[in-house]
Image 1 (tube, each protein chain N blue to C red):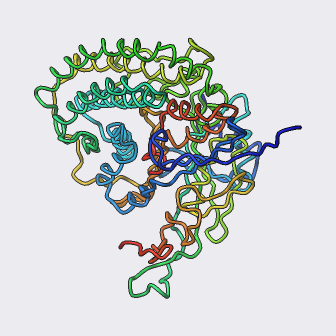
Image 2: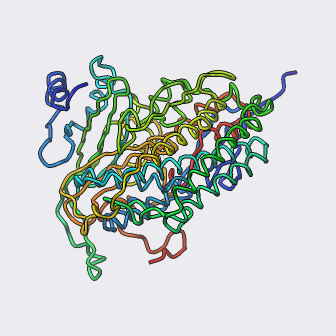
Image 3: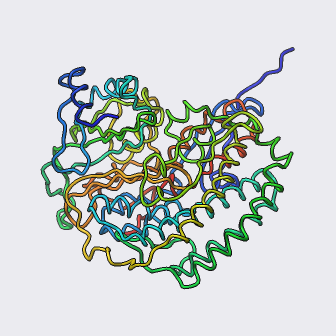
Length: 180
Length: 371
């Protein structure tokens, strides 16, 4: 069993600048911020290392940090609708070791205009649908993902990504009026 | 002369009695043998996570009921537990005991649906009626407690909406007494039925390494022979005070991790749940169940991931709070959603009729997959 701090030091030694920071201040549980373009290598190491053995991915979730600049959109001005410019979208990874009984949280932040994160399906096959869901809901592109399609929304949904904070409901979908 | 063959694509669902909801399976067939299965989900998508962001924290609870609608009590339990850990609320002991009793009753009710409908899928209709007869008594217990049969809004952040009904303990004891022989009856009728074993043993074998890599949890991974139960491995509430076993699949009728094992683990789990309920109603302390409910739920800035052992596996809530009255993000790690990914692996090489047997044995709820 290892604490987040020990794992952080071990990762820092191995990967250097790809491991950005260990956050322990505000949140209830500590997490490690990592580089979104190297997260696949880090995860493979976390899974394969003898002292770590993170063999199970508990959860993977996309998050809209909503830390960009809020801009009043031109078309929806009378309704007070806003779009967000800049800032980040993040992916949280909750890892678990069924053998050594320790847990770890990773966070990879990517920019909102071109959100790209490397897939971790190579390490855990269970990440597949979680990543598809994050793509579906936030538009985060998972590089090297075997089958990146929408999963919960219709395949022909062209009105953006519903869980982004500045998402607007379309008025019509395939000729049908969307309620409210 | 060689016969010309061609692969065929067959759509099973979205409206199909054996898909347990609106699920479409795209079967790629070579004759009657499954080459690949592509599940298409999302027909029941209600965007729970978007709704949750517009609600205050206590208002999210009725929405969690509607995810896994066969185990609503446990969904509330998990959410309340996550919020209590985020806000560092101490819950009275009586509340914890009642939650455990409700959770285990819910587990039995949920497994009864799984087992009953599984029998119906395979072609045995009588066990279905027997299971629903017993489930009805559990639903009655829930009804006298909180007035609802399926969607309860009973477990609140920091407490419960009502205390137990005066008749609850007596009726639960009567139920346990009557239910034990019924489990044996179910075994005689279905579990050791030769036709049933022929249909389910050695079908859809899930090896343990595959299961871990895919994140499969709950009865499905236990059937593959892994002793993994969050009630023991990541303890929460008052589960450590009770004495119970964790049943695992042994490959009694075929290979370890086949459909029959997944079925039978659930039967044995119901008996273990009865043991927990019996001990809990003996030890339950007196107290006020509403005393710790906060007047205004305003957690500090931060984030938490909490998981509980739902009847279908590991149910996780990932909640991010920005210090306001509404959650900034609620992500649900639904056990059926994760289990569904391994489904194509289980089906490859089996017959079309086995798809029904395998799908029934992994016990999915579409309300939870699509949220």
